[in-house]
Length: 242
Image 1 (cartoon, one colour):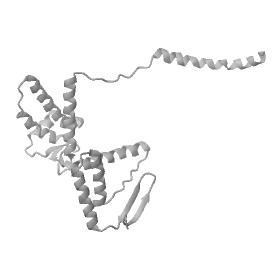
Image 2 (cartoon, rainbow, N blue to C red; image 1 turned 135 degrees about the horizontal axis):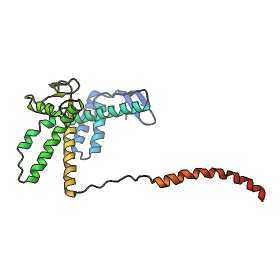
Image 3 (cartoon, rainbow, N blue to C red; image 1 turned 30 degrees about the vertical axis):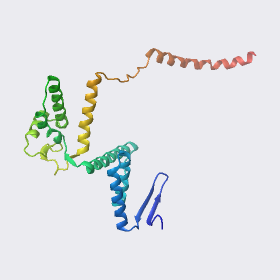
């Protein structure tokens, strides 16, 4: 009466999964709309994430992914890939997608031409950003064993804004149609965070890091030489001298 009914409940030491809910569709829809309103009003990213998970479970089904592999290392690596894919999908749902392969960043280059640069320092900063925007596409082409500068220039000259370089088969394709995409939020956040770190570094003019201590070879040699003390076991015979 108070909690409703479900067709199946799976309980483990970590989770409780309720499946095949018997609730009325209009009640579920009303609850989903209520959670959506709470997400818009919330200022906490943690609360938003949890409410989005709750809304997804109510509005759609629940999928269980079973990851297998030949070894524990392989399983963990696959699990990390799946986690990255899920996070990328959530980011894409929030802000949409852009062409992948560094194409979206290359399409931002014309904006830099319109930025005013009153002094040489700001001109240098714009040049640094221009160079950084080319690097993802440049690196992909370079890793494919091709002339990266030529590939980057060809992508920049493409009349179609979503056309880019597919390194898998070394062809120029429509990146959206080919499924080579990036979440807009990921690209935007990467660029924003990089700019934030760079500006902080310029302001502080210094970087603090922890240098690992190298082991002292003299101390290691001394410890190794103590193994000969095992011969002192013969001193046990001195017990008869008492």
